[in-house]
Length: 269
Ligand code: DCM
Ligand code: DCM
Ligand code: DCM
Ligand code: ZN
Ligand code: ZN
Image 1 (cartoon, rainbow, N blue to C red):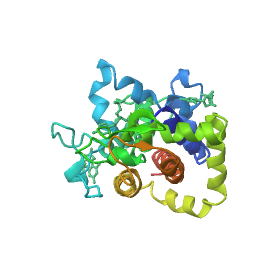
Image 2 (cartoon, rainbow, N blue to C red):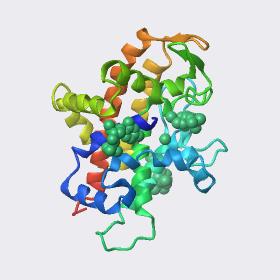
Image 3 (cartoon, rainbow, N blue to C red):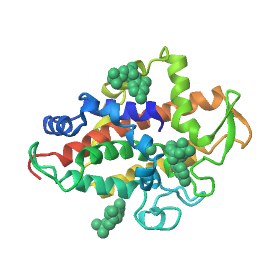
C-alpha cells in the first residue's frame, strides 16, 4: 500500500487493541508518533529508499509464480538473488519474535522494538495488498504499464494508491479520516460476522501469515490481473468493482494487525 493504505490499516487496528497491547504500543512508539501508531506505519517505505535500510527493500513483498495463484513459503519466500527467508511473511515472523521479547516498559531488549513495531505493522498491511503477492514475471504488476483515468501508471500502483485516492476523491470529500470512518462502520455492521472470523487468525503467526499471503495472491488472480490490457486505460468499470475488494483488505489488515499485537503482548503466553 501507499501512505493512505498503511495509515488506514493501522488506524482501523486501534479499535481492536487489547488493554495490554495498547499499553505496550504506547511505550514502544517513537516520540514523534505522539501516541498515534498510524502516523508511523509508513516509516518502512521512507527508509527502504535510503542507504541505511536498503536491506529491507525486499521484505515488503513476495513474488509468486505466474498464474499459479497460490503462495508457498519454501518456494516463494526469497529475494531476487534467491536468498531464503527474505520476504514479507518471514519478516512478519521475525519481527513478531523480536516483539515477544518485550517485557514491560523498563526492560532492555537486544532489539530495537520501536522499529520492530513499525516494521510489523507495515508488513501486516502489505501482506493484505493482493499485488504484494503478485507474479514474479511482472514484479507484482509493476511492469504492467497502463493508464488510470488517462494518467500513466502501472497496475501495482493502481492497487497501492490509485483506487484509494480515487475513492477518497469521489466518495469521501478527499478526506482519509472519513473513508476510514465509513470502513469502521461497515466492520461493526455488515461485516461484523466476518470480522469475528478474521480475528481468529492472529495467534499462530506462521500459519496465519501464510493464510493472508494466500488470500492475497488469490485475490490478485481474481480481481487485479483480470479485465486489464497492458497499455490500456482503467476507469469506472474497474474502479467500482475493485474498490470493495480494497476496502475489505484494509479492514482485514487492521483486524489481523490488532490480533497479532494482542497475541504478542498478552500477559500470559
Ligand atoms: N518461516 C515462515 N513461514 C514458515 C516457516 C518458516 O515465515 N511456514 C520463517 C520464519 C523464520 C524462518 O522462516 O524467519 C525460519 O523458520 P523456522 O523457525 O521454521 O526455522
Ligand atoms: N514490489 C512488489 N514486488 C516486486 C517489486 C516491488 O510488490 N517484485 C512493490 C514494492 C513497492 C512497489 O512494488 O510497494 C514498487 O514501488 P517503488 O517503485 O516505489 O519502490
Ligand atoms: N493523513 C493522511 N495520510 C497520512 C497521514 C495522515 O491522509 N499518511 C491524514 C489523516 C487525517 C489527518 O491526516 O485526516 C491527520 O492525521 P493525524 O491523525 O496523523 O493527525
Ligand atoms: Zn506496493
Ligand atoms: Zn511496503
